[in-house]
Amino acid sequence: MIYLADTANVEELKKLFYYFPLEGVTTNPTILAAEKKPMSQIMPKLVELVGDKMLHVQMISNKAEDMVREAVAYKKMYDLGDNYFAKIPVTEEGYRAMPMIKDKGINVTATAIFTQQQALVAARAGADWVAPYVNRLDNISSHGIEVVGNIVENIKRYNLNTGVLAASFKTVDQVHRVSMMGSQAATVGFEILERLRSHPMTDTSVEWFENDAKGIYDIDF
Ligand code: E4P
Image (cartoon, rainbow, N blue to C red; front, side, top):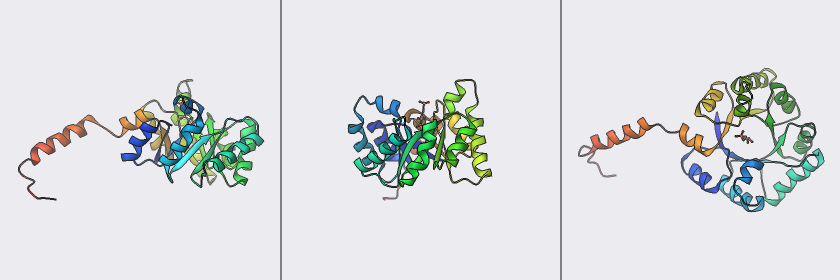
């Protein structure tokens, strides 16, 4: 499973890209709104930070034709390449838009997925990634992890060229469990990425090693 960062915060991304083996960034209108700046100011910074890693940008249009125009506009405006994915919610118009956007040579990430069948329909419509919302499912007394597992299996079963990009996490355990389900990717917020890569015993062990090394490691490097 690869990791993406579910944030548009420049400071968080700078920190993550410094050390974390991130494969990309995902945004949605809520994530962008949290930055309290217009999208036109945020996008150039995101483009610079992600470099050749993936950048998933959500469309806000409702009609399929408008989603296509929006996807093409961002590509032109920010000179986006093959690492750009237009995030399309799995509405009626969204499903229609997917093959149209693919025809324009733009990658598609189907988003706001809550069921196995939504994911299968999106994969059939040509989505490169499908994004099931784990925590939002758990919060409506459904089973986010199980849904992700079923989607992973179905995509394999039908030999579809689509990856599962699990999204919407509130705990490290949810992330761990989707990795055990074989999800190809997870997009995770800053705080949970920080938590999942660390453990207090690691810091304590490093401290012990440093103490034990004193006077023993006498080689200059
Ligand atoms: C992915 O990009 C989704 O939009 C995002 O993970 C949703 O997360 P939330 O349920 O925490 O808002």
